[in-house]
Length: 194
Image (cartoon, rainbow, N blue to C red):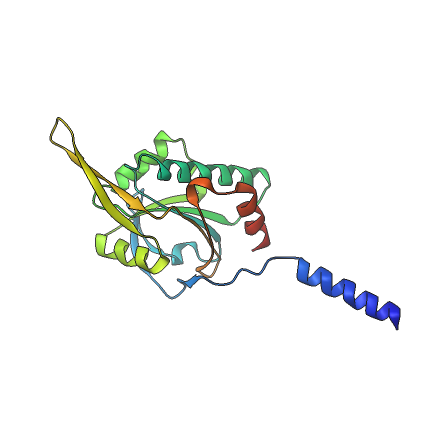
């Protein structure tokens, strides 16, 4: 009898300690956000990545600080996953500045950083669609001060949420991380556990 109780206790401990419980933060599975990728192809987010784990970051290409750090951290995550031979993970960077971040600008942004686009997509879209998506996922982006260059070009920056999200294969947001200061080991472990 004691042996059966000990065995049951050990099995319960193993079952409950293996894997993590990722509660659903937001369910995007029923949504179809029409967006444009860096190659000017229309995709529906999150449907185009259904069945894959998604590491999503939210950026604007003119960002002087948080977005380059977020993008570099996503690159580091991508490299670690390849090294660990973890497949079926898609990386998605969505611009919340569609008025400036055209597909061509996003493609150049990726090229300059020598990013591997084999499983990484950059997205933009119509401003109302982007605004609705950002509200749905809980990313705030508020235009801040502007700068006028000698050429007359006006540029502005955003005060925005610093975020990378882990999205499951059904399109449900499972975890949020600070994009610019993410713990790479933590998200790698979470991806493997999901």
